[in-house]
Structure formats: C-alpha cells, structure tokens
Image 1 (cartoon, rainbow, N blue to C red):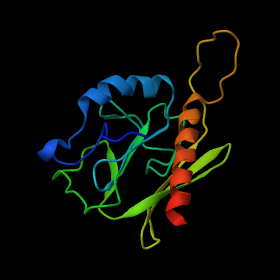
Image 2: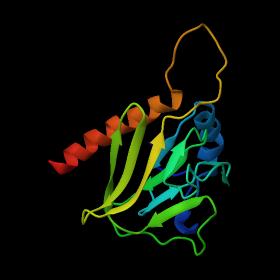
Image 3: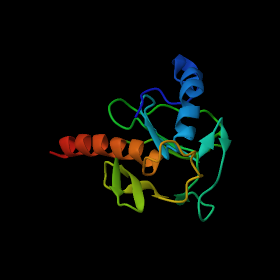
Image 4: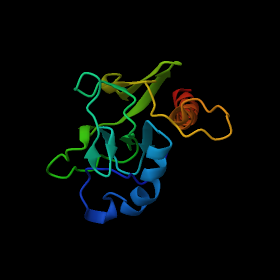
Length: 174
C-alpha cells in the first residue's frame, strides 16, 4: 500500500500526476518479486490498471476482458482514494494502461483463498462497481539459492495488504 500512485489518469494540475520517482524506484522491485497487486490512495477516485510495466500493458487477463488474471508477472495498480473530499477529474483521454475508472465514494472488499483472490470495489450504495479475480498461477522459475522455500513471493505482499485492508474495513464497518 502506498500513497501517491505510480499510475494515475488524473491530470497534472496541482502536482497530482504520476510519481515518476516512485515508479523508477519501486517498479523493478515489484516485478522482480512477482507482486500481483499494488494499492494506492492520494487521488480521489477509483482506478484499476491492466497488469503493467513501464506504462506498457503486459496482458489482458484469462478471457481478454480484464476479469481474471493468472501468472501475469506484472502488478495491477488500484487507486482507491474514494473517501473524504469530492472526486478529482480525470485527464481527458483514458490511458491505454488504465482498464477501469470511476468517480464515486466506496471501499475495497477482498476475499482470498489459497488459489485465488476476488477483489471488489463496492460503492457506498452497496453496488459493486468493479471486480476481478487474481489466480495463483504459474510463476516464472526462480533462481535457486540455499534450498529454502518461499511460497508465491508476490502473494506475501498481497496478503499483508489484505490484512491491513481487512483491519481497516472492519474498523470502518463497526
């Protein structure tokens, strides 16, 4: 989870545009460690990217429509700045790497198992605005080191993010 996003289709006014410094420093780290999902805030709207590296879409999901992803080896970025003040405007044209965007208030809901994770953006009226599934697919072969075992490296970050999100959501719903 981070604050200022690496990818956003918000315009450049007010310094809210993509943080190139963060992208340069973190993107390789995310890709090398097979991070599947990165969650950002800052911009007051919801946006989801395709699996993307250096602004280039890597794949369009199992069915080509962005609903299910397995072993994409590139992170999907979510901007979830959907609380507080009113929504920001988008840039006029939706970038190629941006799959879905919506100006509304809402929250994220995650349902994870050992095989998959359902990710849903739920508007405050209870309607699901966006959803997709991350499948625990084949990862590229990793270099062997000391014979230790590290299960699905990208899933560790994802599970840590889910734990934090679940705690915040539980607190929010109480």
